Length: 522
Image 1: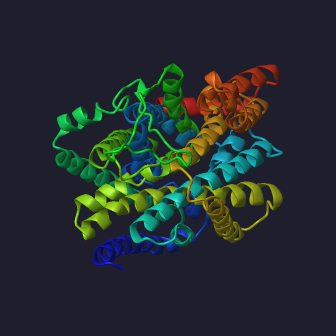
Image 2: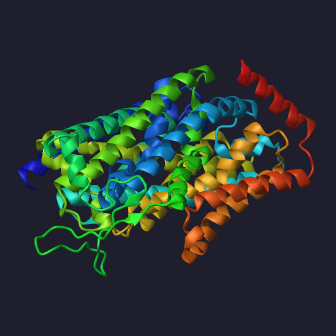
């Protein structure tokens, strides 16, 4: 291994050692009970709640997928997607966080999202519990796969090692420390990783602007690419049959005249914000804070982090295209622009620390996905349905076994190194947003919502994501809209219609709803 790569490896190895240390530190508390392992005993402070929620949410997509999108097609799509995420983040913290924290505690001290949905409607046959747990397992396998793809691309690019080997090594590392430390280790490391991510993004952006000659130079050069710097337009790289961008006789990348980024495209991008209402890994952080009154502080921290990170990620992609126009000639290759710029701007040891931001983003997300998947099977299916008398230590063991199984499935999905991270994440994001988002919102804010309405909403939303993505989107036109939006709307309509056509909630459910509403006004 070359000297520069050795230094990068040392920096990343040190970072990995710190993360493992955090897992070992919390190992004893995590093993005390399944509650501690899965939700940390509701003991998170406002800073860790905010940073852990955002870091686990953004994943490697923030440092690779979004900069890659901006590098490949320009400002338009990346901007509207980021704006949707910022709006969704703010509304989720403002509307959902406090009420979910209070309601999950009131509803039999629910410690998972399926628990809350089931307990909210006092169901006896646990149908909602089972279906929500199944959807969590399906979509988190896809989500975890996107993280493993990120790790594989990062290390194979850095060290010229086969992608599959690096992907598996990264996945095994995440499994080990999550297996040992549980939710508390995941949340504490997510706080540290959130700091690493935002500092890394800011550092690469600042050096990129300086290297490019300032903001005005970046803008002037970007305008030469048709559609690249437009709010309602996208660049159109001209590609060969294999997806590789064509080069001119002078060696410059060839672009078409640019394409319109119309109303439907804007709505599709903004619809990403709807996903937040159904993200189990974010919602769980709301439920885990020690005091609901501290969520206001968490909200401010989260929004500032989110804005800085998303703006920097887009900026890196745009500047990267100006400074290195012909380095990446495919959509999947463009997702390495952050890695390339880090290695170009900084000495190897510093570059390794900066690029640890990608590792941080990946770890902070994949550990959350694995942990919630483990809780879905062990707590919500195994203990609640199949073996109600299971002892806590037994549930803890099943949680850890499930964690390993989900990781293996995710690794199988991630074997394709040609996967585009942005596309994988967008599908899983739509799945969670449409399956759980409407159910969570109506459960928290509409007293008339009943069990049958919630069931109809979950099934219609989750199934429609697959139907729209795999079938209807092929027709183009209005059917080309991001599947999250139609699936979210259909789920919402199903909840309202079915709830109104079926039996009203019991007196006990209504009284609990009203009691939580009073708590929210205090």
